[in-house]
Length: 180
Length: 148
Image (cartoon, one colour):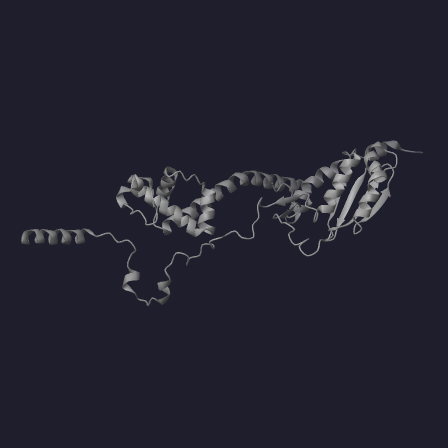
């Protein structure tokens, strides 16, 4: 997702793994349904209020439901969460099933993540299984007991024989041949 | 008496000016001084900021690629294998890992990365790559050449 807007919230993906382990606390505090009494765009919200709203309120006693009839304005659902976040869902020309689905989503959410830029599309608590690389991962532990200055450790790791060494070796070989 | 001519001299530039300018000011909220408050100055710096953002999208990809390559190079060199040899041997062995994955392995799974360098070394020894400095095949790696 792109950072197109300066005031966009940005965060990493989180999973609400703790809520429900001991006890589940519904994070939705209150839900305000604003609708017009006779405009056609609020018809779905009005149908929802007549049919399913009381069931929703009974099923979730921890959520406070407010109804605000506001003439000549578009229908809105405002959800407020326990951490103070607010989410507005503009439900113009929604059907009542769509309204009830949105309410289910608002109830199940842990907060408002709309408009949040995800910095990474993945998250892991354990990025490494073998242990992350450190400068000591591939060092021998005998280095801890080494005393410096140390001839062996101070010499280069891979030292090829120099030209002088090769000449000396060739001379020795020749001498051995002569002896035979 | 009502003089309407004086009223007609008031020039209204349109109702949307506030919101047209607000769109620009919102992008400049973190600028300093007049660049944040005066429209005709702000618009110039907002345009530059947007151009930098456009250019930066490409540069980010280039930077990340360079970072991955540097990390893989460092990991290889620690185990005595050069980077081009590593890539060639891995691709010959059928290990089609991209640079991002290899860099992640080098950082987070160092033992797996060592195993990959061992595979590369064994394949290089088998194929006869890197003739100038021939690598011995490491112990613990079984290649197809050995089985045949």
